[in-house]
Image (tube, rainbow, N blue to C red):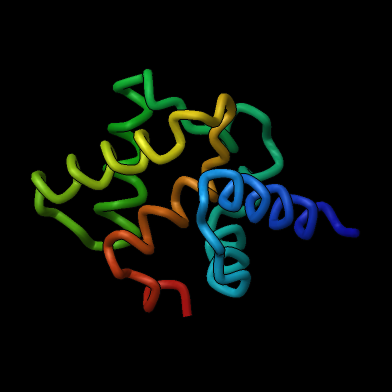
Length: 111
């Protein structure tokens, strides 16, 4: 199994652990869009307890990649994502992003 496939499998497992049956093709597209950072331990994880980290998710993914600029909607989706993954100690960025993409209905950005 390639490293890429390992990341996808881990993300599928993490999503399943929080009750989400993931679309593997969409997840693969999200993983691919993150480039080599998915293989770096620190860059591949999201910390909901770190405001600077959540701001980076907002700026670099939600606004730049997904094109969402409504501050209220962004705050809601980040809170929902943090709540959904609250039982997960090490939140995989790609699983976290998958949830955000689905919540915002932005799957078309990864086709």
